[in-house]
Length: 109
Image (cartoon, rainbow, N blue to C red):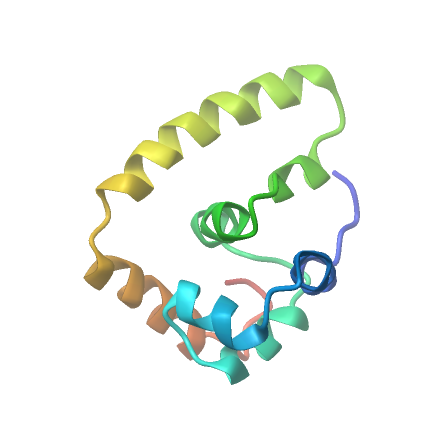
């Protein structure tokens, strides 16, 4: 697996797209300080990374792929998870983010 500091990558993508931190925080249903905390993280929960990928319109999980077979497996996983995310209610997304915010001292979302 590639060594990726995902928080730095997310910050770069946000800047590339000209998206403000406040706008990104609103899309994630969290506050700005939680976004800044996210920028410091080396790892992230898969569901949250998929949500961020959708918000930023970028395939961030591809950063971790090393070969074409992994890419195929990844694409299948994304399709499955996209369906799950579409089924999530706003309340459930808020619960995911609240869990993430309470684990800010952890290195894993």
